Length: 117
Image (cartoon, rainbow, N blue to C red; front, side):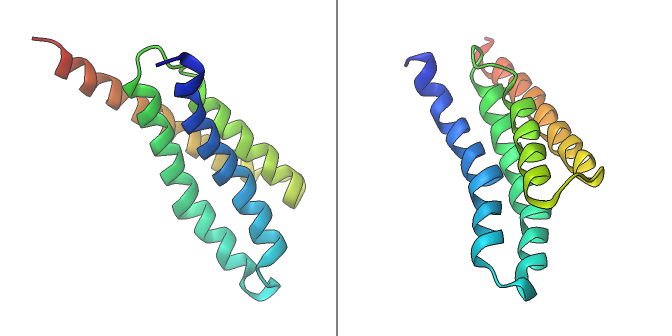
């Protein structure tokens, strides 16, 4: 499997969850339910996506470890664009980065243990 084809799934997941879902929520969700939609994204969907990206990065040995970092940066940039500058989004980006990196390390450890005789 080519290197670029392995990157397609996590990059598409990042683009969909960290960019397209918040843009769609801001555009299509009514203002009365907008805060609830954003909280659902911040507390459920985005952490789950960070964990999946970290797992994917840890599973493939040659896959760049930069994927969790890229996902946190992409979230932060989208949040800055949609909601303006706020330091709270740095906290969320740091939490998503930590989730992704810890999952990547755990997945790497598990898959190394499985492949050793």
